[in-house]
Length: 504
Ligand SMILES: [Zn+2]
Image (cartoon, rainbow, N blue to C red):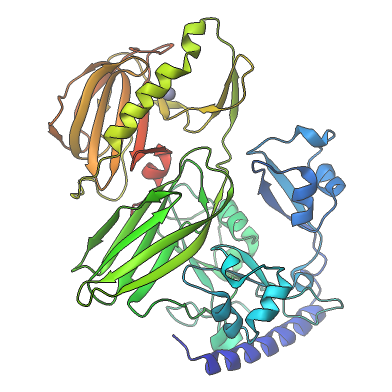
């Protein structure tokens, strides 16, 4: 942690570097100034074109035009809209993305501003109102040309001056000590285009920052420098007992899972609540490492929610409160309208009864952990329906959703355990037909439905990849397929996130 005085000094030097750079880029040809580029906005529940436009300092007409929209009411949740960015970075001011453990006071101090200034600048009601992932305005947009530091580190435009990667911390030597690049680790299935979108950077800018000749050649786990993520890094305002506090992802979404990790300096017990539920905290390493896995239920309203933690020292019994505001956004799932003649299938009470039975079983907690890293796919078959698709039956509201991932496989195709665990249910259910539910420990469960038969019994310990049944069409099913669900602390969540990402 850098002392505040040296941060201030670094910031001034950075400002100076920015001014010099701005001048340099003006003379070297204003490639970045005035470039009309774009970002993508995923339509959230409650969004309308006017509100979206306002968010990006645009008129609704500009957004409509960029997307060929003729009917302003025709946008749907999950739709991706192109947002033209007409202003350049230099005109947007300087913003800071709030991280876990930061307070308005610590952010203000790091930028040599006061909390009161930031309150006024961001129209905040109170310092506690900030939330993780929020973009706080630090320096208002410049009225004139190049008088404010750019919102992001300036793009590296000059070919004669390739970016120098000075050391393992990936600091940009030309900016001095104050500005470092953020390092992104490439995940399974990611493309440069997606990474660029995520950080509001062009593929070209990232390729240049990393000296990549071919941006299409990425490898999993490869570290990528993302230029333009705001720094300096901030001092975190954490209770003394807390060594580190991370939240991943920074913004949670309905139907998906998130991780909260804490490291304490001494042995401690942690208790907490989020989304009106008591959190299960998994503690290891002599009581110093704490993991919390959170499943955000589908249809959680898009809002900012308070995460409340209590850290209790094992030696003194002293308690330290720690809270953070977390944003939950819509999952961006597709919509599907289904027309069926058999009204028997519309009986929602049967569905709800079965679901609450499963939620009860999957809401139990086994302290052992049998799964490692991520889950494997349960069948060698094509996926033909994803989790979360919002469904309307015979014109009803979109108040139901697909609770799992479907694999289209011939009857008799092998179904394998997605990870090691213990079978807690192998039974015939009304809707899911022959169903196997496996407890993987730490609150994680997987479910396999519509099986022609189950090849395991409750209480049986299974290995990852073990044959547990075969694909069938039992229960409420329109044809042979495997319906696969993942449950976390009694909440059904998107299974593919558990295949693609490593938990915790
Ligand atoms: Zn299904």
